[in-house]
Image (cartoon, rainbow, N blue to C red; front, side, top):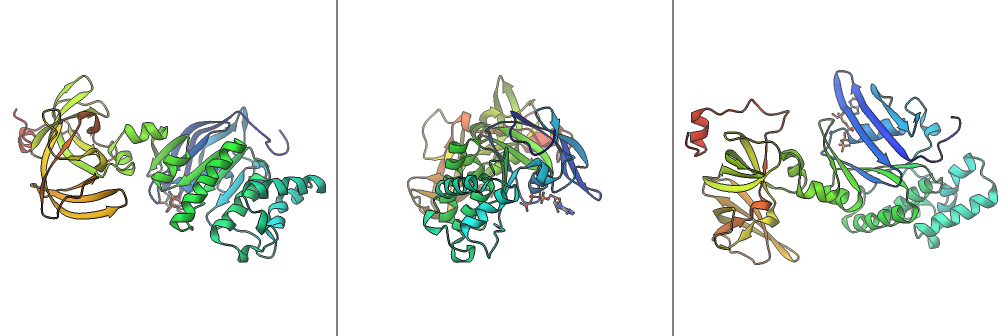
Length: 380
Ligand code: ATP
């Protein structure tokens, strides 16, 4: 194939790997992306998100792996031959060119006829709602407006794939929310295939069709926002998805998908997030909003008492930090304000209590010694 790739049905990443010296920043990323999908690469700083994006863009050569657009390998092509659109956190606009000229630049480089450039630039300006600013220089506009120019400049080329690396991270909170909606709206109206890098789980959940959670260069889970939010596959993903309460426990019994766990000096019932057996040391994850203050009666799968330490007002709800008798901190979101120093009863339903096997990369072999089980309150 010569020239740029105008379109494709499937982008396939096969075992994408990139090392820097002895350090593997990205390890065997496999993913199939369908045309029109919005994919978020999500994970903490240093997990390999930007490395993955730069490899796909062609800015970094692969150490191993393949990138296929339908049946065509593109990993050996330079960035301009791949023809992907790129939007980064520093907008990198030409400071001496107006908004209109910044957007037109790529089309001029591609020798698109003048009348078509004029029409497409006008469309792109309309799309990102910058009509009144079309003749301004970048320095005369806000960060959000500049980021819109950067987006318009990428999408005006009608790239088969748009790559975005934390495009909103330099904006203040209000603008970030506005631009998030804007990006989603653009994606819906243009149907562009997009890969979006962020460390912000809320941003990823609200924008993406599917999320890829990375840690230490390895994929932890791929799924829809709902799947990841409700069924994180391990404690790392859970931690990232807002399961702020993660407690150590030991499995007592497994019946179907339901597990009884010895945790926090009591027995709780929860849902197994992986294969588990009696005696397994696990982490029990509960989101702050899934803990209820007050005793709902016999249905609770977990009941513990906690002393309230800090109450933060957060609009419609209160974020409460409390401590358990064992000294561990517990986080709760609640509609009614508890008093500092008050002892409250916390309960959760079984389907909201997730029980995670130990993470593969940090786990020691399961310790099922009598001492461990006894320490966790399990009789042997
Ligand atoms: P952030 O959100 O902080 O940008 P990230 O998830 O995008 O992080 P990467 O920038 O992909 O992470 O980096 C992954 C790992 O590879 C890190 O440990 C980083 O230090 C390392 N790394 C990245 N680029 C280079 C480089 N050019 N030379 C050496 N090591 C690098």
